[in-house]
Amino acid sequence: MKDKHLIALDLDGTLLKDDKTISEKTKAVLNQVQNDGHVVMISTGRPYRASEMYYKELNLQSPIVNFNGAFVHHPLDAGWGVYHQPLPLEAVKDIIEISNQYSIQNIIAEVMDHIYLHYHDEKLIDFFKLGNLSVTYGDLRNFLKNDPTSLLIHSDEKNVEKINSYLSETKAEVIEHRSWGAPYPVIEIVKHGINKAIGVKKVADYYGIPQSRVIAFGDEDNDLEMLEFAGHGVAMGNAIDMAKHVAKDVTLSNEEDGIAVYLEELLLKS
Image (cartoon, rainbow, N blue to C red; front, side, top):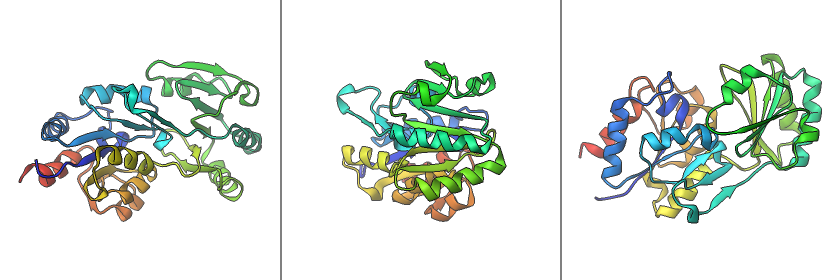
């Protein structure tokens, strides 16, 4: 082959259709590019337990980026190493203390595959219950003993903006925070300086693939740094406006095999 590329795939709204499945066309194209010697990887905000099924479905042989870059490892090669950058516990406890002033619905801390919920909530647990995990309920200030990989604050739309403003004003030097869309108004918090681009670069460096031959697909604000970093940063047709603005290209939506169409044109037609 001429040049090996690294292809980094966001999951929700990108690789996955709205029903959370991967289309047969997209699977076939990804299988072809892997057979041609290119490296395909997942780069997601999800924990590994909630992305492992797609890793196996695509028969990937690469490292994976989880928690928006806070956790990077190689599922098939323990010797590859583990890159884990959790949040400082003291900063987390400060955030929990202040969040209680904003009529929060819940706070969820994830320490790898252990979830801590501030308040018992069966609907919320059903939303997170993918893969093997253990769950602890109760005041996080008492039960949380280790630095969490990520922190999620579930609030109403009105208070999400207020909490975001507080975090920007007081914690900008220690955390990164972003808001989710439907189905829950959630603020996701990871350690300062962590994003998907950090993890993708780590994998690209491992394979000796230059930035110019990194192809990244995404649709949301947690993909922005990755889209900017990649030589081919590609926003999905269903992506938010900011993602389309920072991307170098825009493809079709996640319901229209946008990844497959783009890769066919770039890597397979020649």
